[in-house]
Length: 193
Image 1 (tube, helix red, strand yellow):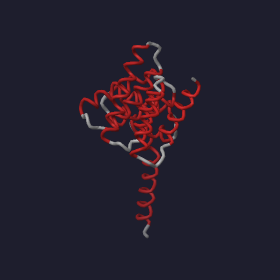
Image 2 (image 1 turned 30 degrees about the horizontal axis):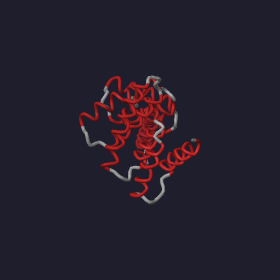
Image 3 (image 1 turned 60 degrees about the vertical axis):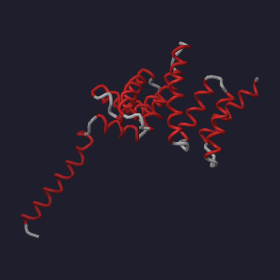
């Protein structure tokens, strides 16, 4: 290899190292939010998803991503970002089951964060609608079945929670830990009466 070729190869290699090192700094808020979520830095992820949703409320990945991040970080002030974005996405595409499942989860979290009985009932109804919509299209969706059972459990409708899980398990005989958890909880509370 001639001197010029070695210099050219060294220069290209050096530039590649610089580009690769700078890539995280060049990433936008959505990419940074996804990276934070991958590291389970839920607070950072939730805040970055909220920043994305400030600029573009219908950004699907951010609207779905903020649900898990805000719930796991315990940031109820950010729940409305998720709800607004997911409702906008639901209007655009009524058959996006991931959006419905996420809206069900955030509705459940919003219900738990409210003291007002009327607000709780409204969010519970929204969660039930979302989870039932998902289950009607995807009867094997474990998260939707568990979410629906949880809504009924949180509303002290223990028998209904058990029925939801039993109906799910009848269609999906392989056990579901999430759904079985809520069935177990419901049985426990029924035994207390």
